[in-house]
Length: 263
Image 1 (cartoon, rainbow, N blue to C red):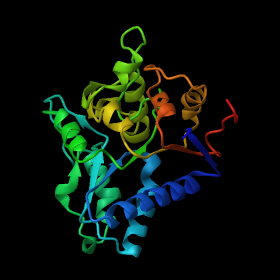
Image 2: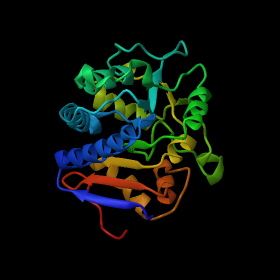
Image 3: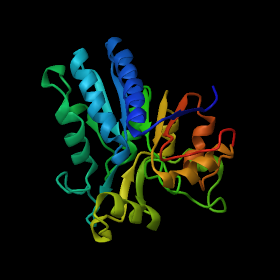
Image 4: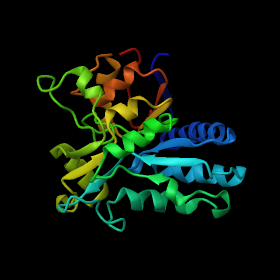
């Protein structure tokens, strides 16, 4: 199955379509009365999606007792541990505020089924995901430098295409562009508030997901998406690894990200 590009009119249309796709995947998964693994992304791109998805789940009264969520990443402090969940940039705090707190408790979402990669032993999450049969559905954004999760670009002279695809979950240092972007978008421009490290789900478990939906809505994402359209897989553009994934859809908002079709 070729990479599927879907152009929509604006941010809300992007969010609505993605919420529908996520809801359908969850509904299929939980209806089978077995664990369903749903990979979560964070950031401003996902805010409306999570509000709409929670509303859909509440209205349809889905039993979420078999739903497991796996977050892509979390910031790591100078002590080598997750930053506090009440830190303004914490992704654990983000998903609680913007998604889990919106769910009706009667849906039976189990707090023990909310998973993040641990900086102490990131490989443990990979082992668990693999043992559960892999991620069923993975949401992604794309960084302005083309990263997915916090899998930052690496020069081709440093790592092979195959080795980059096999990268496990791990603690990583963040690029200056990522720090600058996150400071501007989520920290009021204050670089000192952005940790210099994060723990991220690796390329290997992301690419093993059965279905991936990537969202883009910022004009700064124009360049990495155009490069992705060129069809060349390279560790210098982590998002390019989705080109060979069997079931990936990229939904982009045309009012902010304008691409030349066919490039």
